[in-house]
Image (cartoon, rainbow, N blue to C red; front, side, top):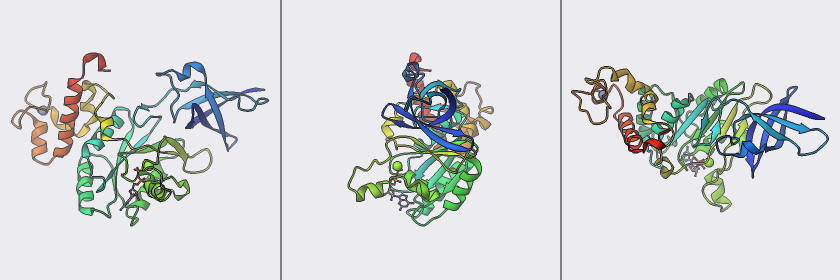
Length: 314
Ligand SMILES: Nc1nc2c(ncn2[C@@H]2O[C@H](COP(=O)(O)OP(=O)(O)O)[C@@H](O)[C@H]2O)c(=O)[nH]1
Ligand SMILES: [Mg+2]
Ligand SMILES: [Zn+2]
């Protein structure tokens, strides 16, 4: 008998996909192939996709993804569809915090209508730096959690936030540079996940980059579950090619700067080269109403997008 089901792609498996399906309150997982057209670049199946699968109950392993349901969002890095929350992870120390990566990820999230949340890890190594970073993102209107998997700080508060919001099919991913402690943090939040971390991989003498693929995990049982993804860390080089949106999309991704841009002297103020006399955004930064580091990131992204050739501007 041929049947059709709707489910969510939770994992890639060497060209195949694991699709999670709810049937009468029971969770089933099918290893599925993608129909031919769903292997091509633009239409390629992504982890997080809601899909229709077709299978013949008389033939084992016959499940095929026949349709991708409309996406709420789709990211390139990390490669994942239908995210509702992006937890942007930065370490207070080791590796040294680079705020521009946080700002780029937050911009990408906002552009894709995904809610950004800033999570500072390793507060045990430098609490005062963690607090400084926290102030920057609080001022930017982004929720912030200061955590340490070493001493347990902030873990319960973040777990409660995740449990309350990432439910009923909602999904969230943890993203950030390699080694900031994403996998360790997810294990602290939800011990049943038991994700591989650099700590563990050193013990078993493998390489340091332990999270290689995006995978969605259920965080509760049944149909009201939320999904949580660990993602491979990226290097700063990945961010050099900032090909996620165009220059005209940039202002809306820094909402707190927009509050002041109406007061700039010239309507076409870029907030990049202009001084405090002309630019109300520069003025607000000098007065501490917005964080200078956020404005710096804005300017740096602006320059990258400005330098792109028009045909790349999509
Ligand atoms: N001191 C300290 N080290 C941590 C903390 N969280 C993670 N680490 C260490 O940071 C390293 C990288 O962690 P991992 O979770 O694999 O990072 P990922 O690449 O972001 O997934 C490991 O050696 C962890 O033990 C923390 O809160 N405090
Ligand atoms: Mg990891
Ligand atoms: Zn301006």
